[in-house]
Length: 337
Image (tube, rainbow, N blue to C red; front, side, top):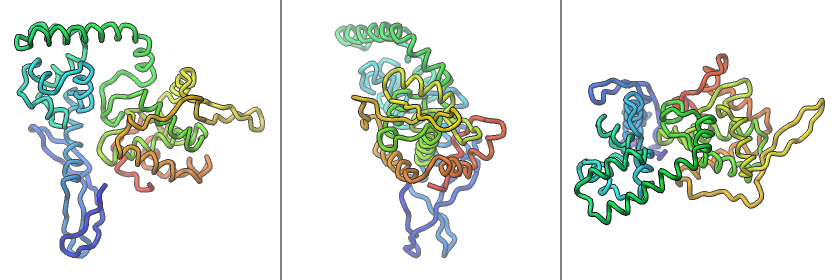
């Protein structure tokens, strides 16, 4: 987050957070309000970035409550059909710029949001395309071919889809996923990044992923991978992490080496798989900075130090006794990194 200097004194101001209630579409939501405080005058200031961060928290909760799609989902639906924002808006009967605004963060009406979710299914989108009377015959024919391809791909990927649903759950994005749909490909790249940089033990890798996702959420109110994390004795871990890593290993995305210790105890070390390279293009510049920051922060710590470090987090302290899934809003309580 950018630093802000006091317009009164010119000194750098401290960033503060406090819980407040805001009303959106006649409904009240509690958020972590961010603001800067001038220590000399005690006056509060915000920036465009801060205001947006506060608003996104409200929008995310509204979308979650009403099962509306998130910007990343809205953008992905359009891209998979190979359409412009203007063209898909035309097909769905929206205003010319509506779809583009939804992709950029504006919350759709409940009816428009549900229609967008519905056309994520190519079979349902085909029915709407067939009814659209503004598309040229050539456009409709080309789009119909693409839709039939997606229907075939969906059938072929049935096992993969079921496996991802088993590993990550099939719920819509919510506060436990950082308001992002779980993305196995992106999580795999995160694991590859740390395997190449640090060759971490499994316990350490779990914390590296936790901090990467939660720091991303702290910065823009969206997690990096959409993974849910659970608080256990050893600290925060991705939910179903053993099955997730086993699947990555079986797919040859990573190498996991069993290292024997004393008394028949083994440690599991993650290393770069042969011919596998980290794909930086899947990440934003901010996300790459966070991955680098997390990697640097833990590079000189051993496993026990990393565990103790994570045990200082309120996200772990509040949830460990019941082994609960961790709400991403705990990201705003992370001040160690």
